[in-house]
Length: 342
Image (cartoon, rainbow, N blue to C red):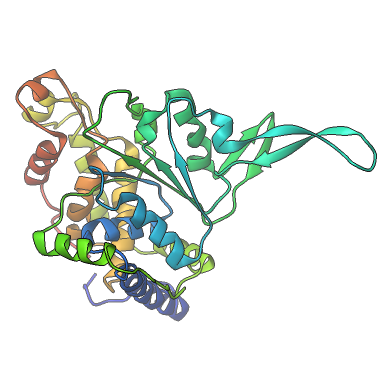
């Protein structure tokens, strides 16, 4: 299919696709009132929103990890909750619990459910690796099913619903690394680096002056849900689909066709979810750039944030100082590009 061919189903789809592209530009402009730099991180956060995925944001303190997520919630006028994860945090502190309350009129006591902070549209799990696995797992059902079950009763979460988690990579004492099964449920691992000097000067200037920001709510929660449905209707060629799957399969040691460096350095490779998120992210990225099809470049651009927390290195890689990112770069050089593109 030619690159300039529109392949969505109807004119309504085309109009909605144009709205998505405009929404991406408008949300980014509004966030720029408060956030300096971090262009790639902002793009990946918005990709998560348009796909309906959850993401981890990793970076040293002071790089606006929390601020980016909070600002998105403000711009979209969505309900936001920040949960500070600590070693003594309990699952009920996240999901809520049943409390005994007395009816003042009848004097009868009954159990009343008090919802926890998970009952918001955007939930920030701040420093998620500072709490034990039992409490971390309280997020799993909410992330996957958009519901929570307490005392045998299931409560549906309000849509749209997203979980963003932050991690601090330089403080390892007193932390509990996330289990692989939970890491796999996050669409992206978004890395935030130190910014260029001019951007850092602008941050210092703006944060040490009087701050009075007003955001225009240019996109609603209903718009986000409509964009998520549209993303899934974007066509993907067989060649692009096979390329995404091949990247995932090639990262697994023991898999037929796995290169020598994977067998040598990788303990566990990417799961099926990696290919799913490559395709979904590629669809959203295409629409954000005003295209109606997924390209080879979309998949390559998203390989790093999709794979970096799914490819687990072994002792040999660690002893030779080979990171998962280095392995991903070699994968992109090794796996053949699709022979035809949409």
